[in-house]
Length: 228
Image (tube, rainbow, N blue to C red; front, side):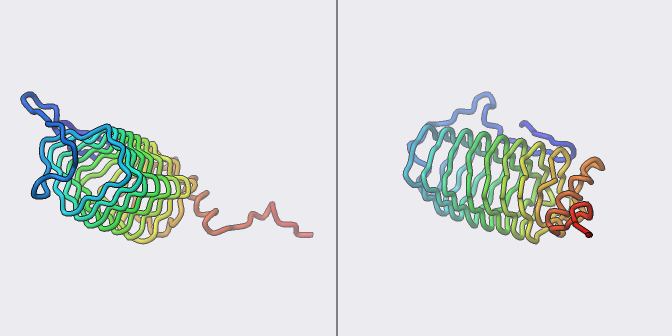
């Protein structure tokens, strides 16, 4: 079983390529009795994807392109999502365990009441997304992800680490962030700094936070004031 480690945060990855394991190709993610296991689903172009009360176990989803996706009360265990484009994604009331999202587009996604445990986001685009009451109950890692203007509202990222991510104008509104590892990122354009108490940064990032705070407070520098 593989792992992906960023500094002190280590995510356990799905073990889908073990000797003797075979993933069966499926034509749909809507399985009998709401369960799809040991599967491969890929290269599909869908107008809409709606899954409710479905359990995805030990599988790989590749090249899925959806114009509108709605996922509700979904359980995901040991699944990889590779090269997927889930437009207009609304994901709610779900739990995701030991999962990988790699090279995926989740632009403008809405995630509400989703629990994450051992989840890796790598080279993904989540720009303009809104995460509301998302909880990281186990390690979660974002690597080289774009999170421009993403809003984190009442989320728990205390078990998360971000590395080399684009956080321009990302906004934090309430939530729990103690222990969030922000080393290795440019923090100069963050918003909502007041809630980022007890996060982990490098000393070299302190000027970046100062720059972000000055922008958030809309301060005026003395050298720009005409005192005449």
